[in-house]
Image (cartoon, rainbow, N blue to C red; front, side):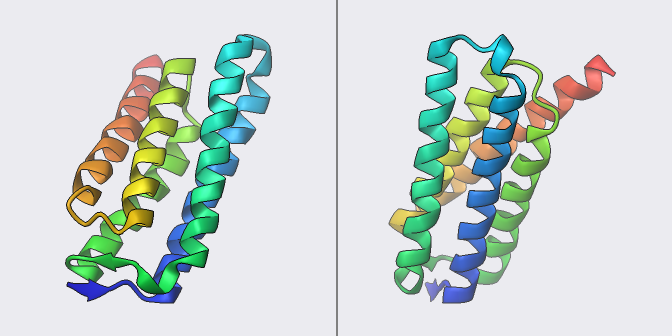
Amino acid sequence: MEKLTADDAFELGNLIRDAAIALGDWRMKNRTSLSQSQWNELDDREIVLLNTASSIYTNAIGMTLADSEPALARLRSSVENAKSAVRHIAIFKQALDLASALVLFAGAVTSGNVAGIPAAVVALEDAAAAIVKSSDAQS
């Protein structure tokens, strides 16, 4: 098991932070269509993601991944796809599913839970794909 470099972890932290900000921007843009509880739920998820990014920065050296290079490329791709999917979110459930998948992903990466990372990546990919598919169907 190879260690994730500090630079790689910092980049992952940046990607998670950027995804959290994109989710927050979507929440602000759609504030009139969200109930107070939906607003609060997304706000909570955004805060968790921002705190996770901060934790990744702090703990960058100790993080590990199984196959560092291919796994890291997939991690980067998954978070980039999630950021892209934010632009296509049409309903609250999509926002919540994506935010939940990002929290699961960030938690697995932050904890160094090598066994949990693949499942988290799949959940993130599935949430992003469902949003894009729904967006394409509406077009």
